[in-house]
Image (cartoon, one colour):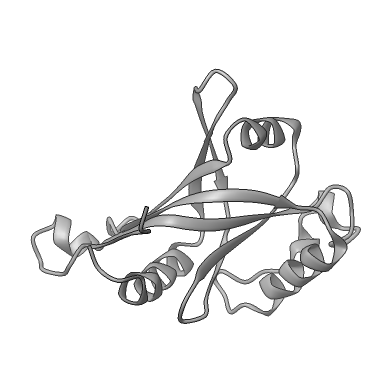
Length: 162
């Protein structure tokens, strides 16, 4: 296992290049359910946090109320993959929603975008249709496709101390 300071920047670079990830939750009967989401990851040199602007649907809310842990998995056609296993928490306050909204608008493409382009969110970050998920990883993995294809590279793994 590598240090977070090694794995986190590599994870952010790969995740932001791929952009969309499969996020799995579990329902009240512990059955998995997946959806595609678009996290924005912030690495400050010490901590990694992911942010997702999303609709707070009854299904997502019920799943995270039952179990706040999610699995975020990225894949690209060249077989680069990375994953973040995280604790997720909802944020509905105007300050956080506006900050994350503006962070997505300010981020460079391809991860950056204007959330107002999504029809349910046209009323802006304080709309009831928009909420924020905060993702706090407890495990990260970065697996370059070159490793899978026997062309070199290194698999990076990090797990938080118990």
